[in-house]
Image 1 (cartoon, rainbow, N blue to C red):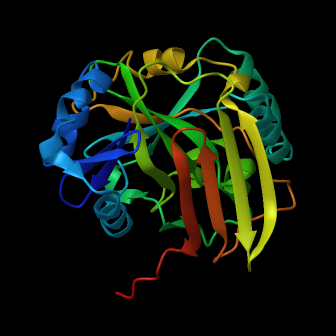
Image 2: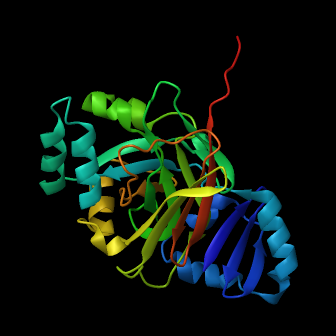
Length: 286
């Protein structure tokens, strides 16, 4: 099943059928056995035509987040370890990422409050004080308030590699800023967890041309989803649940940096494609 958040209510997709749900988002998703709970809404009185659903999704679609925080895991793929070591070589912190990759405890960090999260077909920002910026495609978990993984979405963890590479203590500035995270286009609620061969793909277009494209599978992750969720919930409470980006699996070459106007498309099997346009945060004159 897929669940799309609209300005008012939500749309549930089950196969080729669509159903309109008039219920508050957090009340809808923060529960155990979400897949079976959503089955209760499959009713002819809530049924929409395909055209009605398509128009609503195209014109009213929001990122699939309510009051949840977004967190992220780092260095969970070998490619991410290599990239972090490369960017931090001059600062002398390269060994830090090697140790994190091998350690029992994962790297977990706060990423975004919900009001800073972009959705499908919305802009994400790059920092003006960063000379090296990249998107990071990530399978993202929705974890309910008692620590159970209930759903999945596509995540874009925007990263300022020049800032993080300068000093590992600058990680919050490299990762946490306005519209540095995107989620969407929906929540995917499977009956069983995703297969390890689930593919993640990323494409970056500039002036109508593809300047980067690659793909991998979630099975190449060193850590399990349940392991990451367990560590996050060890000493944190989340009243409405939370989202957890599970790590970067695809990294453009070191000579690549994003530019305003670039279009980033991240696709995960069964979930869909999250599309974002790169921009700078508008300058506010005070």
